[in-house]
Image (cartoon, rainbow, N blue to C red; front, side, top):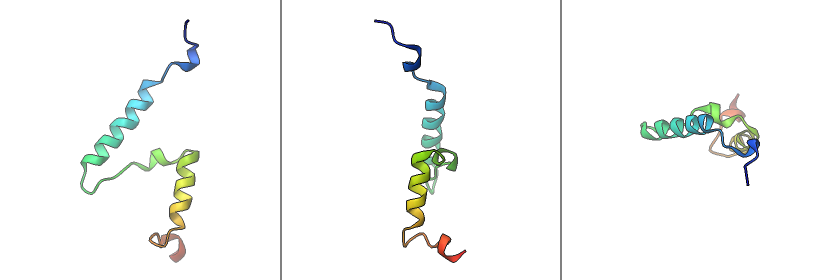
Length: 61
């Protein structure tokens, strides 16, 4: 049975993400580009990080 065109993966974006993550993990200190955080899940995670006691920046601004 043939795949519907919408089920074919988009390797370019996946490859870009994978390459960016691998490059960031090779750096010292390790880092990730914020561009990958700005989807729905990333925004949720960032909001939760801002509520952590260790993340004082939002409380001191």
